[in-house]
Length: 106
Image 1: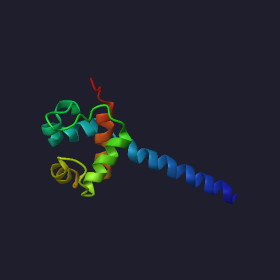
Image 2: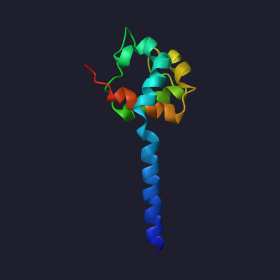
Image 3: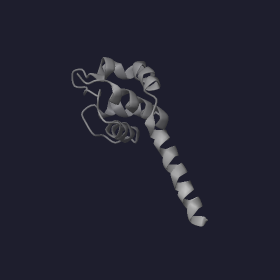
């Protein structure tokens, strides 16, 4: 019986963790429209020295946003990204990643 509850508990944690990072692409698109588009362009297509984000894998996008949110410099535009990522919640990061990964990267 103990192993049943441990298995059930593990399953519930796995399901909950998956939903925490799945993100809502529509909410991510709305959040992207607040200020991200100014540098990264419409639909994350990239502009000037700001990289293309559209079509990137969700784990990649989450990692980058969390790294910037932590205040870590990882590129030439780090100061700007840190300033913009610091106020983001985990949910907003997941939503942005869901949106950007869903955009076709033509």
